[in-house]
Image (cartoon, rainbow, N blue to C red; front, side, top):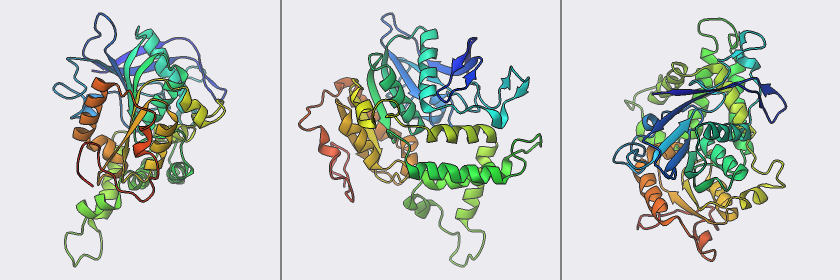
Length: 366
């Protein structure tokens, strides 16, 4: 069940504006033990929510690696999202109207600061494991740079140290589709629907892979000449997001993702990553075109005590949501071993990556 925390004081944003107050929507699973050392904090991705047990089945839940019988699991809905935290759907107390497209720019660093503030209010001083994938991994990396002594272990999945020009281009293309819908930001009942559906169709192309479509979206007949299965699939993906997500929130979150740069104000990304002291597990996906393997290799190269594992998957970037059995095994080993990596061998999976095929360590698969 969603819980709510209301923070009744201003929150200054990195871009210069201030939110007069904050609401945090969050879920918890399990119980905080007496020593308060069993906290696992999950940062969700772009259009997910704080109910991690719902969108990460097979990884979060009883009997799985992140078991609420063993851990106190926390997931907080990011600022700007559709699922209860302060967002474009919130009323601006200064105007009495919903923010909508006037919602201020919230950076990934702002959201990391927001999570740290929520942790303070919840009385959580130490986090056993902080983890996130994609945009959630960006938030987790920022938080680990902001408060390295608070985070004992870190797991970063399919993410990066800064959002790439390729990723920004995908996001801008989506925003162009949103802006092309003249109803966006109006009071129309379906305001922004067509723009959001088109934007999501673009996004799905970056989340999947050629092999994903080849395996699942073949034409129903070799005689088809119109209305292909892949076409209806794209329309369905757009409609499915429209049914659950606010277009202005989607616009705001893509802007937020574009701001991600661990090196901003810290000299460079290499220096920022060097401040992370937590043993870190980095999980990459060999078919990820949006957050390619070289981006995780960069993380591993500059986080001192880190290990990188490359998963084989036909699901592209979405593999971090789908390949839960593999992720669960890697994470279970990490939680036991804490990855005290020998500096002489830590780059075994991070050097010379271009054009290579990878096996998951401990398997014979190529």
